[in-house]
Image 1: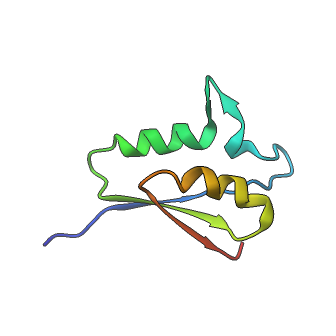
Image 2: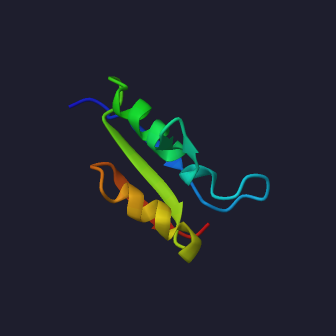
Amino acid sequence: MGNKVVAVVQARMGSTRLPNKMMLWLNGYPVIEWVRRRLERCEKLDDVVFTIPNTPDNDPLHHYLASYPQRVFRGPE
């Protein structure tokens, strides 16, 4: 069994320059959806893990990602 390649995506809703940017709509989808779709198409990846802070302002991001097969890890920022 060889090594596995895993993409770890750090995403959060808090930002001083562009708040809530991961859930902003861009050409019909939230930005996080564009990231997720591009990584899903990457043939060299074995897995994708999204890491998001475990704060209430990141709950919408967590709820959105929970409907997809990729894993979501919540922890301290």
